[in-house]
Amino acid sequence: MNRFFFNSIVLIIAAAGILGCAPQKQEAQRPNILYIMSDDHAYQAISAYGHGLNETPNIDRLADEGAIFTRATVTNSICAPSRAVLLTGKHSFVNGKVDNAQPFNWDQPNFPKLMQANGYQTAMIGKIHLDGIPQGFDFSMVLPGQGHYYNPDFLIDGKTVRKEGYCTEIITETALNWLKNERDPNKPFCLLYHQKAPHRNWKPAPKYLTLYDDVTFEPPANFFDDYEGRGTAAKEQEMQIDGHARWGHDFKMIVDPNGDSTGFINDLKRFTPKQREEWLAAYTPKNEAFKAKYKSLSHKEIALWKYNRYIKDYLRTIKSVDDGVGEVLDYLEQAGLAENTIVVYTSDQGFYLGEHGWFDKRFMYEESFRTPLLMRYPKEIKPGTKIDKLVQNLDFAPTFLDYAEVEIPEEMQGESFRKLVSGETDQWRDAVYYTYYEYPSVHMVKRHYGVATERYKLMHFYYDIDEWEMYDLQTDPMEMKSIYDDPAYADVQEMLHKKLEELREYYGDSDELNKKYLDAYLAHRNRR
Ligand code: SGN
Ligand code: CA
Image 1 (tube, rainbow, N blue to C red):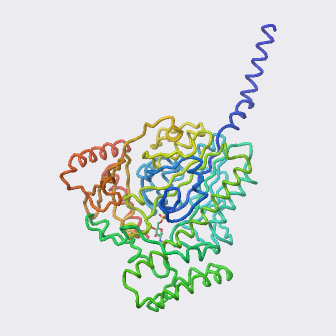
Image 2 (image 1 turned 180 degrees about the horizontal axis):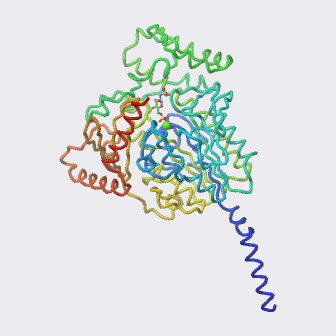
């Protein structure tokens, strides 16, 4: 072959690469991302975590065929801030969305925007809970605010559309339809499939209204907690199942045991006549049976009934979430997409299922600080992988960008856990930082921040109190007694204070920032 001819061939091959052949090949190899998130789904209510409460066979498939994270945590245990963190990869005090009340700035970089700019097709379907039009998505269909379980409204390209049916099922159908019919099969996709369930006030699907009717659940060992051994914040919260949950809104009584109307009837106005009829047929007999014996029950028996009504409705809504995960995983398999799709299941935070007598979240205590995290990617993650390291929701954005081969912006504060979950490294951070701001507000959980290591936790509650709490999770996994003032732990206390200061400095948090966000919060409340 003469030299000129050879060089020409090289040039032609190179040009073909630049003009599209080579990148297209590479494009086909970049993984799809299916990011499934539910709202307030406690790890205690996923059977793969082994708590024995319920069965979630479809979510469990991700752990069997991929990885389960036992100590994934959030940086701020509340809905909208958690979503802002996962999109931006930055702590609340940096992305600005510190509580549910203050506005979110969509103009800052987020991982879907970056993936979109780098050849991915992106979609957001379900609950986002961030005001404003979502940025970074080729398609978005989101619930305005909290959304409704029955016949929910959705915002599609800024327009409100009411859809008849059950929210969890509608979100699943829409996600499946997007995967099957709407997306461009020549591009890798990134789909955020985000359920509203199992958020309060737990309304099950018509087909699950009587699920668990024949079961009695035992509450956690610390359900009747008296909060001795902890500070003022634990004592003054307003999230007790027996105390703060309401007869109508939470326990689904139209008339309470004392004969007073609860207002719950208004919730049923949104239902179609058929939905209402099915609902009443399922709940009226249970409610009447309880009311008939109410006066003869002890306080403790009533508390246990409340716990059962709460946990059953909560788990019923999860059943539909798990069904949806199954449908979507089945579709990936049928369509030949399972191998090249990273599937993540997580929640915006954890939740109390009666631990300390509570529902809701917000505290840095384990049940709401932790969040479930399961992940499958057959190409890199070995089936049955278990990760105990301290990953956080802060890490999602950099992790997804890493898989998508998109440069991770300097301003993102999380770390990609790609190499951790593939087993390529076991090097990881040894402590995480936490902040919580929404106070005074519903459930009255005081402002706090803190640091957690694998074994210990230190928290500072501030604003209208100034109290420190410290826990040894090895000797006290239920966090029943603060050891902050225990002389035997003086060295640990010193170590944790040091770590806390290091992390605040590293991430850029300070008392001044706390003050700034407090002032903005109080001003926002006064305007309303
Ligand atoms: C609502 C709920 C609260 C819940 C917040 C925040 N009350 O106010 O129980 O803590 O949302 O939840 S309800 O009357 O609407 O049920 S979050 O997940 O959006 O942060
Ligand atoms: Ca939530």
